[in-house]
Image (tube, rainbow, N blue to C red; front, side):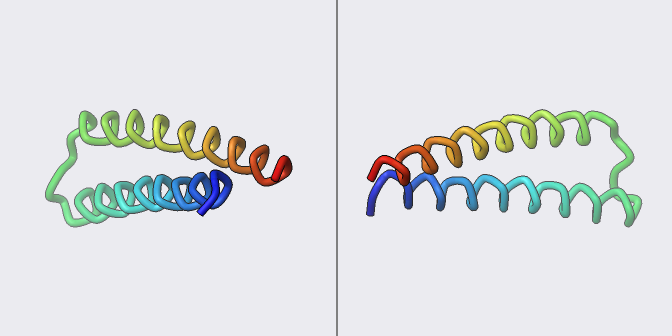
Length: 68
């Protein structure tokens, strides 16, 4: 497996993590189990880091794929 494939799977994994976290917080909010803004702030911080990491990984994968 090359760098491009690794970065591609890393991007998919990080994006999936963001979606899973959003789904969990949405379900908890809709069912009334949490109304804490701290949970959403933490989710947004984690989502921001994961999305930036996914974008960087996708960019590195694209460059590696173009060079291969």
